[in-house]
Image (cartoon, rainbow, N blue to C red):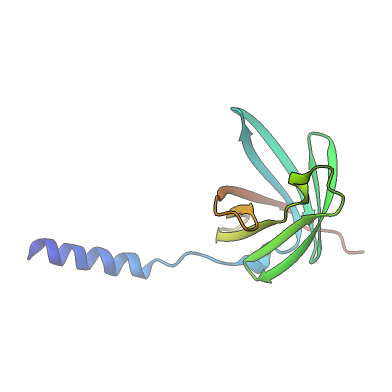
Amino acid sequence: MKNSIALLCLLLVASCYTTEHNCKDFKTGKFKFEHEIDGVKKVTFFERNDSIEVETFEGKTDTATVRWISDCEYVIQKKHPKTNQEKSAISMKILTTSKNSYTFEFGIVGIDSKQRGTVTKIGEINTK
């Protein structure tokens, strides 16, 4: 009986917690994505508007189209792919948001394998 009450209390507390999803705050802007490749910290900077994302990684800049499926999901497709792998579209899903960052899940469209990362918003895009 004690275990049942404890479990019920735990479920009630967990159900009251809601994950923050202010995805619209991250549709446009300037962003930074820090990640590791073979144990080495790498940083990607990118700017995104409604339909275009411009990414800079290790001094190389690339452009992709952005197609929003919902406020929290979108698909990017490189505009000028150089390899077969770059021709594949990548699905992005924002899982949680905070004041200046979001955690997301991403993977190649049509493949079940997904990875996660966190992006930090570092500014707004100048629209003038």
